[in-house]
Image 1: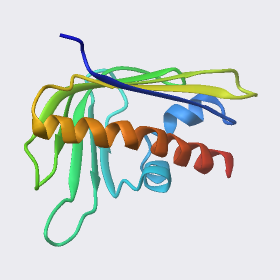
Image 2 (image 1 turned 60 degrees about the vertical axis):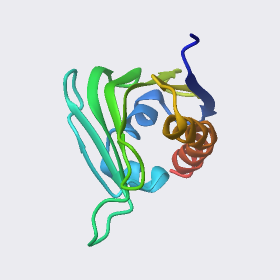
Image 3 (image 1 turned 45 degrees about the horizontal axis):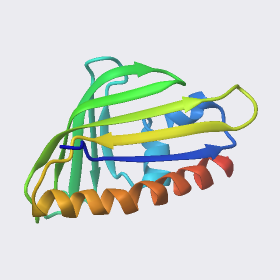
Length: 148
């Protein structure tokens, strides 16, 4: 069977280090992606956990995985990625690859690939929301970084 994956890319007028850094540091994660809380160890084998829509009732949804490879300004690869949402099955494991190519000046080409989707209704729902979500998220990242 064909492996389902979601790929998206965008050109951003910001250095590669700042672009990859926006996936690592709490302030930009909140600014462009609405992440309310995060725990990230930016190193191979480190944890990568993001939480959204936090209230006194708990977390709206969480994505959590393990950093398989981190090269500042070049690549962030997260494996064993799991998606938790109180209204859905726990979905995973997946892999998320984020790559930045560019020089210190001029545009950075950012590439994102999320893969490891399985079969079934819940997976189809998640896949469709990610297909819609990544282009929107990358546009938000571009706007955020280019205002700075």
